Length: 294
Image (cartoon, rainbow, N blue to C red; front, side):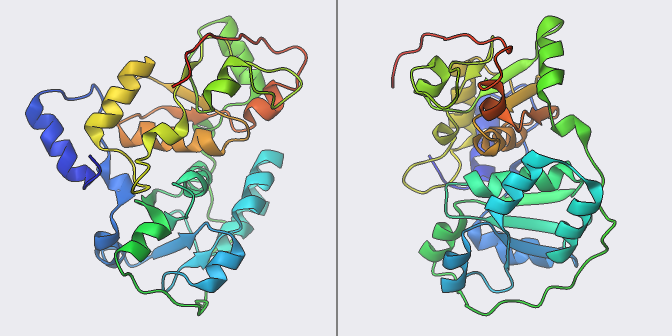
C-alpha cells in the first residue's frame, strides 16, 4: 500500500490499531501537493540532493543544488557554527525557511540533508515522497536553468544537540541506561558477516531494521503507516520511545531517524559517525547477533 500517507493514517486510526506515538504525515510532501505546500509559506525552498551531473540534466524549477557528498563529509568532520551558517546561507536557507528536499536515491540522500538541516535548527524540513523519479513519473516540468539564490543571513543557525549522539555519549549510556538503539544497515553488516571496518558486528542491544525496508521498491515512496507500524513492531522498535539510529556513516541512519519521526518519534538522535568510527575503535563493545537472511 503506497498511496497518500495521510489517507493511510486515517485508515489506520479507523481500524483501531493506532501506534503509541503521534504521527507526522506533514514531514512528507506528495508531488501533487508540492506547489501548494511551497505557496503556503513566503520563505520556501526546494533542495535537490542528487549529484551535480543529474541536476544539470534537468531539475524542478527553482530547485537549488545541494552538495550532498560534501555535506556528508563536512558534518562528520565537525559542527562549526560559523562554517555551517555560511553553508546554509549560500543556498538561501534560514531556520524559518520551509524546505522540501528531493533525491533519486530512495530518500537516502534527502534524509541526510533533512537530518543536517534539522540539527542546525531549520524548523520545517520535509521530503518529497518518491523524490525526483516520482516527479518525473507525474509528468512534472523540469528545467536546466539554475535559479538565482537569495543569500540568507550567515548567522541564522542554532545547534540542536539532542539530534546528534557521539561515541563517548553512547559508551556512557551503554554503561548506565542503554537507549533504544536502531541499526539501519544490512543483515550482513549487523551480524558481522560483512566486513566494513576493522571489527564487525553490532552495537550491543541494537535492534535491526534495514533502512530500505521502509521504502516501497516499486514507487520509491515511504511505505504506508500501517506497513511501517508492522515493520517497527516486528523489529521490536517503539517509535514512542527515545531512539539512537546508526549505520556506516550517518546516511541510512538518517532515513530511519526520519521514519521514526514520521511515525511520531519525538526524541530521535543519529550516531552520525556510526560504524566507520565504532567498528574501527579497538575498545568499543561489539556483539554479533544471529539473524536469518530475508
